[in-house]
Image (cartoon, rainbow, N blue to C red; front, side, top):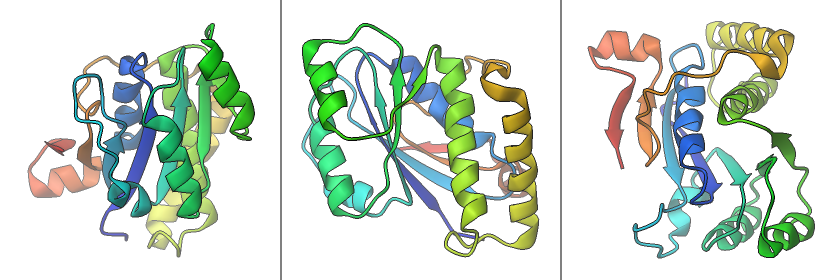
Length: 195
């Protein structure tokens, strides 16, 4: 089992609910995986680019909403320079000219979604698919791989209409997340600490 899988998420300020749903998607992956999630700074947070969390991440997601804001472009460029394969999602909304230009120039294969709950499903499926495809790279054992494979089959069967996540929140500002198995053995909850 991997000690800690890091996920970096470039996301605009208009997608606050999506931040929560990404945290829920990761927390709901089965097995004993521990995750650290780092997001683009939210409005009011310092915006000094720090390449360290991005370069050390196992996965890089970019989520585009109505507008593109700094430092999202820098984050994408840094991810590409670090050899990350972006998983790109775009909310089906009217975009600003800057966001439309960014989307077309980015040369990403954008997966569109309608509602934040749909993003939960898409992110969980993309992460499970990547983990199942390369278990040795992520330090997964056979039991972990089987649990993720089963969850991936369930997600594919459900399509994008799986029930929306609850709105309990908790991981929208960055977090270390333990799986339900790890949380039970440590006596803690799913959300361990915010960064």
